[in-house]
Length: 93
Ligand SMILES: [Zn+2]
Image (tube, rainbow, N blue to C red; front, side, top):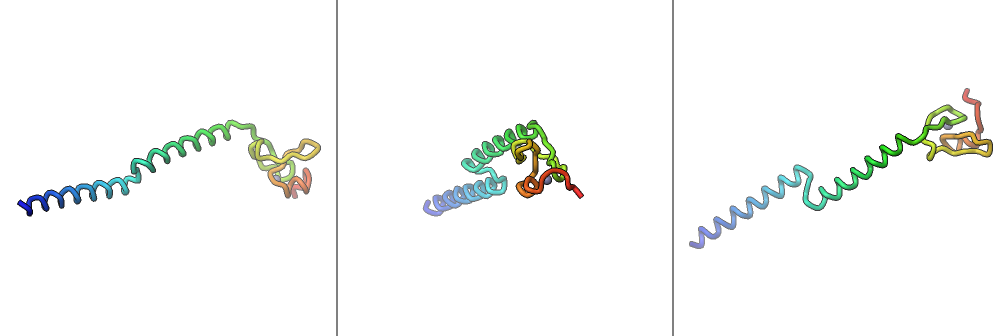
């Protein structure tokens, strides 16, 4: 009788162990899976909005970048970085 009980306990432990291993391989445990999906969904929405944003051109090197990331000088020229804003427009050679 005792041996049968031990056997049942072993089977249950093995089943739980195999189940946890499968969840780890799938990378979707109950807690981490939900939070990860929420974060990724939010990031995708932000990226989608960023692509819709207007693109402006750096007055110094001519590279295009989102308006929110561009730096403007007193004349209204847009630059990709603080260094190019200090150098000013043109001078692309
Ligand atoms: Zn630039």
